Image 1 (spheres, one colour):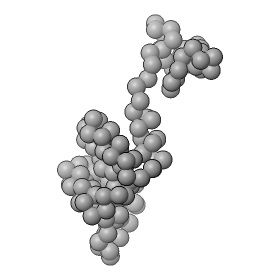
Image 2 (cartoon, helix red, strand yellow; image 1 turned 60 degrees about the vertical axis):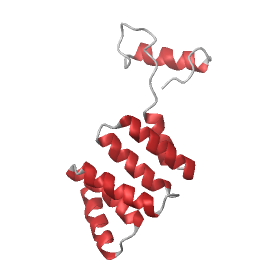
Image 3 (cartoon, one colour; image 1 turned 45 degrees about the vertical axis):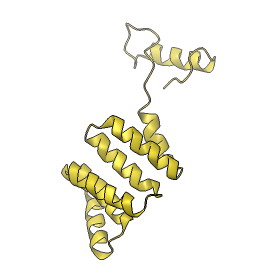
Image 4 (tube, rainbow, N blue to C red; image 1 turned 90 degrees about the vertical axis):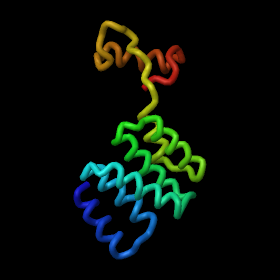
Length: 130
């Protein structure tokens, strides 16, 4: 990620494009913790190219880093309204709430819970198993 940050900084200096700005924003937020600056840069990219879903992806990821889960979900959904993006779909799927373990007194990673959950989901008795 550090190499990506360096490359995006160089790319942004050579050509001031919304794409470079958006990816630079995510890189500086993740590597340097400059969340406010990252959000600002992403919003600038979105203002210039509102139909490019990658900008919404990067803004949503920065919002997640900042602990702004509700805002991130809305940002991801807005990006999907403009353009289908499998990376956004995966981000949204990662945030779906999980069902409680099949056997409550066992940890969800316990093999018994894991495999019972899989079997019940395949039998259609436990839908949406993660």
